[in-house]
Image 1 (spheres, rainbow, N blue to C red):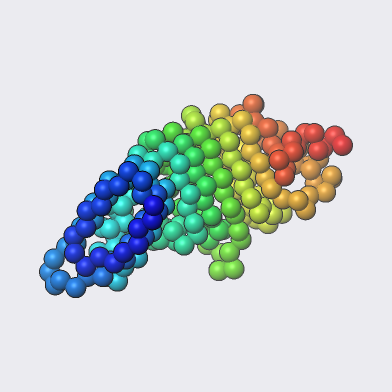
Image 2 (cartoon, helix red, strand yellow):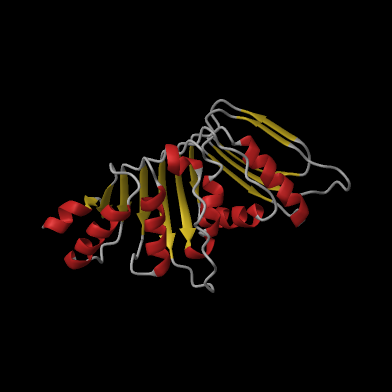
Length: 229
């Protein structure tokens, strides 16, 4: 079941079958705050758009994030990530204690948000990053903090579209390998690697890995296997 609507007054929606929810805020009542309540246990996708001033958007985003704080699986698109990036400068993220799996689109210009967001996900077990190098002016990549999930729970990482020879790609890969204490598998999807390059990274990653159980894969094939072919 889908719902698509425009709101200019308070809305309450309860459904046992609702899976997709689109909502547009269109404030017309001066001096009043509209509210939305949703009771939909099977909801999988939610989209908001509005014409509200920036100061109000901060509160809306905070309430929305707090409302979904119990989710176990999250997929974050690049436009959503940009909104979260600006929000992170205004206030802290709520804690996502139940969140175990994340798939997110990150560019090199937004990597400073990565560790900040992961600090809110203390029980994260798997992470998939669709990585891209931004054409925007390079910003300082702050990947010095080590969130709790890297120390105690994160077991699997997959980084797609990674060019490890580019500075941001190498920094991202080594960040997880060096700091993830219980990591079991990291997959670096870069099909441009030669055998000589694989041999080089085989030795490097073994030396710097924090978890002795960690296996490094290129294009879902174990690095040590590729290095011996």
